[in-house]
Amino acid sequence: MEKIMTFLRFAVLRVLFLCAGLMAGVGVMAQAPTFPNRPIKLVVPFVPGGTLDVVARLLARNMQDSLKQAVVVENRASAGGVVGVDHVAKSPADGYTLVLNAATPMVTVVSLQATPYDLIKDLVPVAQVSTFDYVLAVNVKSPINSMQDLIQLARKQPGKLNYASAGSGSGQHMYMELARSAAGIQIQHIPYKGNGPAMQALLSGEVDLIFDTSLGILPQVQGNRLRPIMTSSAKPMASMPQVPTMDSLFPGSGSQGWHAVFAPAATPKEVVAVLTEAIRKAVNSPDMAAKLRELGLEPSGMGPDRFTDVVRRDLERWGKLIRDNGIKAD
Image 1 (cartoon, rainbow, N blue to C red):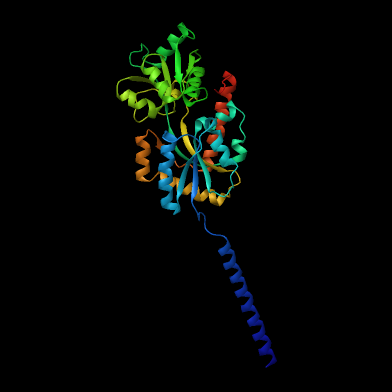
Image 2: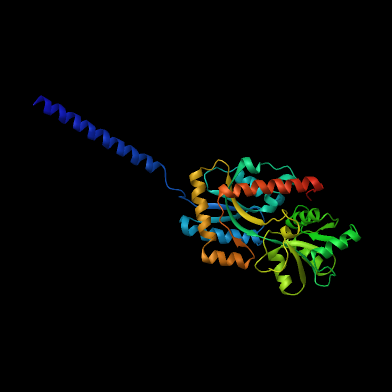
């Protein structure tokens, strides 16, 4: 009888311990809610209305479908995007504050000026949203019909030809300097205050060239106002397959622009993974993919493992170009 009572006491104690363990597990689960459990803020470090802002609002709307939480776009425009990026870099690393930015200025501004953040140490890539090409173009009235024509003319008259940009350090400035350096020619830079004035300068014949995004160039080409002579990437553009690429003319020099989402560096990997998957689903959804292509952008969704290498490569490429050519910010 005593043996039976001892066995029963041990059995009861074992059940109690198991129940205590289960209750503790339930308590831990109750204290760790699934991410996200509140709205996410997506910072755009420029004014509303530009391509980046349009992409951000498309992305926010489509991310909500998989996250089941609101994604709110907030414009923080100042200092060439530095203020908005710095705000995110110094925000809590919990996945609730993100920034969407473009390759230029995201990776160029840190080489052009001192920034209050370190792009590699203070931020982590979440996902590449889209990619796009830049297109080198001339006025249709120009005698330049090809890159070969441009090189010959520039070598005959060094420094006489000029090109427009939206300002020192802008994408137009960086890509034209990349092409100019690859070709070994001298062309004068004329910075304007924004994309609109720069484009108008080319259309009016005030300048000879512009190296602008495909979104800015394509409508002018279709309207027979501009002539494309080279694209920036390694492979031909679907909308301009006959235009030679920079990589085909100057091997190894091709480069694409991109839009991407970043988070504070200490954001937990599991939270980054949730955000990456939500972005991947959003940009490759039929609705958003179609709208991105209407803007001249190609949907991506590349995750942080691969995209981190892209960021580091672009930092090195643009940093070297800026240093070698003594490029300064406005």
